[in-house]
Length: 196
Image (cartoon, rainbow, N blue to C red; front, side):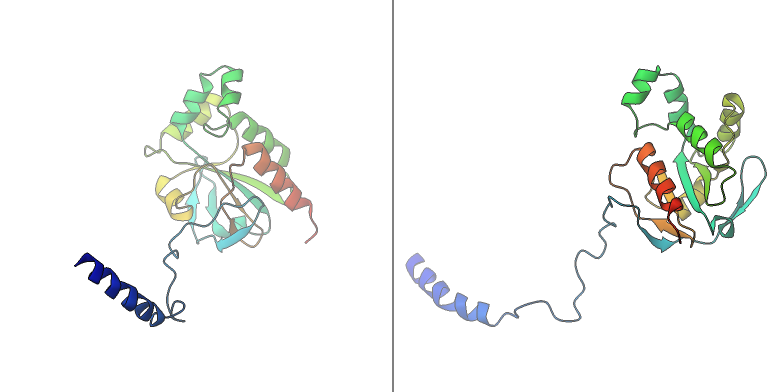
């Protein structure tokens, strides 16, 4: 009985395979359409930044239009990780680079470019309690701008954490492939130095 079944299968299989289309129909959608954007190893820009208007913790109003005409480095952080980083000695902090915020380096970069005509820095604090960011900034003396609004952060940068760059046309950078903060800042400075 098994031998007969195998013989029938051997005869039918080639006929069935011959009737199959050689490829997907022209109007078929890829099953991979929902895959996330592939991480890039160069600074590339794609989606347009959505429109927004909000205030930072010092009361300055920020609009999406304020991010046009310059490269804007966006740093996404939370006070819990920042406070934990503050407790570490410098050697331990260096070994955790990329996992925890490195706000001293961010402050150094902000001081360097705050009067620049082609680079600016903006940070978003993702704490659910909006009072944590102003308290932390006051305690530490950091001066870079902070928007404490986790709802807006999730709207503007869904699925992102750590760093985003906005180009002068208001387009979001593609995700980076395991870049450190130093690498992102280097790429921003290099892009801003290119003639447009």
